Image 1 (cartoon, one colour):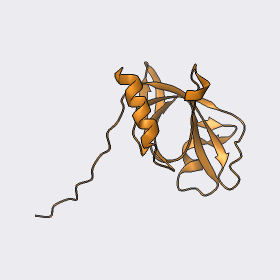
Image 2: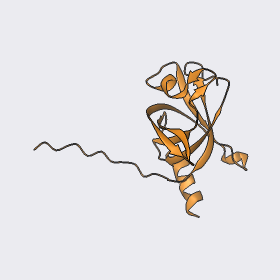
Image 3: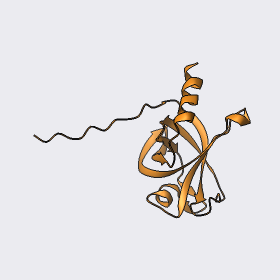
Image 4: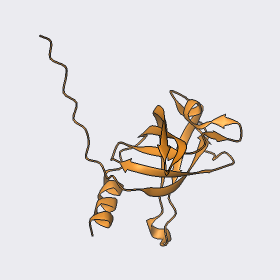
Length: 130
């Protein structure tokens, strides 16, 4: 009998976070025009799961443009009531599936952050556990 390797799954925050998502040129860091509204349904220090009703931004497919791509990054933008709590995270898409969200057809997109977000994760944990 062959044992499958055990992979530790990071702790996650499972709370709906409304954010914006866009694309940026991976070489220059320049944001591309257009944003989509997304709901982040779970968040870990390494990545997140997004729910989107549309995957196209100005003719570019959000998932395929950032999957194993050196041309584009996916960028998450928060917008809070307190500008000090705003954040921007670059990431890449790693999986996609169709789903239903709020009784409408939608897409789930799994993303991996380019940098570990441990500090932000801890801040969000405090926010949602207070």
